[in-house]
Amino acid sequence: MLQVQGVFKSYATPQGPLAVLQGVDLQLEHGSSLALMGESGSGKSTLLHLMAGLDQVDRGTISIAGHRLDRMNEAKLANWRRTEIGLVFQQFNLISSLKIDDNLAFQARLAGRFDPLWQAQLIERLGLGDLLKRYPEQLSGGQQQRVAVGRALASRPGLLLADEPTGNLDEATSDEVLQLLLDLLRDSPTSLLMVTHSPRVAARLANKVVLHNGRLADAGKR
Image (cartoon, rainbow, N blue to C red; front, side, top):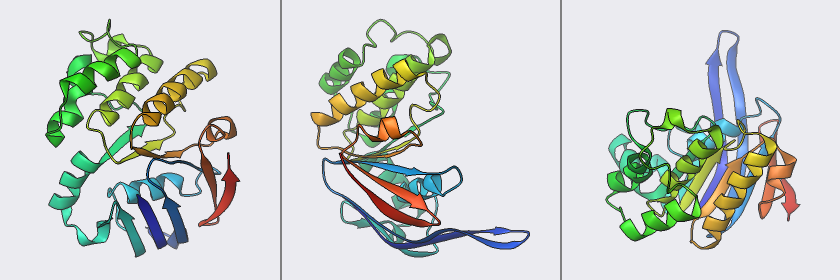
């Protein structure tokens, strides 16, 4: 599903180039899950943004389901993001002007993959049935993140990229949202890569790697 080979990335600073990633190699199989860990500022979010096609590598290649990201122009990348991947962030990024049912369907409609039966199943399993006519600001943090998870999965993407998706939640709510996410993924072909600083969260995923000094080290399987 995901193959990262020899990826380098640096950013310009007043003091000169800052190397963030230095030859990262990573692989994720279909239907599997992987926790990407590392200290603050280690480049975890940078790597995730590269895998989402939101930024470009300096050197190396990223392939997702056989698609080389560096071979796509901006229009193709935008279409690919709509149809092939799901994104969940720490900041829920719901559309404040849309009610919950429309937020849930937004990504799937953009991708041309809206499925009323799958939408209904997501609503039921995420416990959102009584919240559909509310706006995001009327929901708790945990409820908003459940909506964000449902929106990301509504188009049945091959890969779900999650950046600290439970980082703004208390421990109990974090556990609840993570369990719902893993339960939904268990019944789908979607692969998961999750950036997290929490060993407790990482332990729930099948595999984990640690980013340190711009390189990845295998941290073992669950």
